[in-house]
Length: 225
Image (cartoon, rainbow, N blue to C red; front, side, top):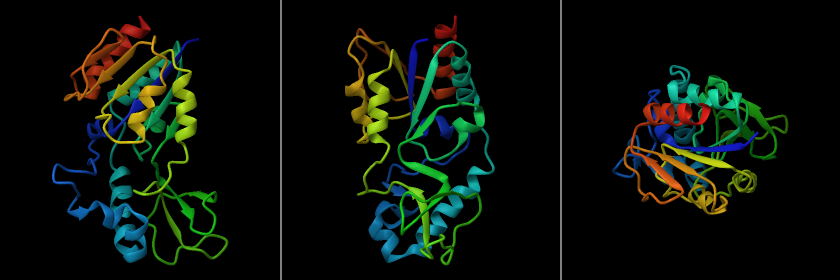
């Protein structure tokens, strides 16, 4: 079986009704990014940070995978498919994808401040006073600005082994995720699905200027048939 690696961004989840964090004004729903998505913001006002992610978690419970998520599962019938996502939701998993790597963490998990390897499933609100077994405050299992991306090396290795690369709903302008493109072997076909693609087509790069639900359906139909 050939290896398909799929890199997904906010665009695929937006069609399920998940608000994209960063707006055109650089704010995340009225908040300065560094207030709610940085270690310093957490130190300065942990209640604000917890409230921000509690609202994101609550919203996630109200949405469902869309046809783009579901169509990607279809590829697993004929290919080894690994999804590398910049998204922190669980829509790929709920759709049925079996191998998902989360670059930026997961909204439905929390971790200990005492031991970053102590990660817990968490579906309810996270509050000050919610402690791990070491009596240390739990924090969102999210990679904040200024923090290392623990799964980056794993994602690089996966991308190096790709026979086909599909990029969906991401500008490929945000690092380190954008750097993954350079690790794909130069001879493999790459498909880029985004309504406003920020890169140009080439011999090996096919661009579909479509929203995720439309573009993914076209690519999956081509690859499965």
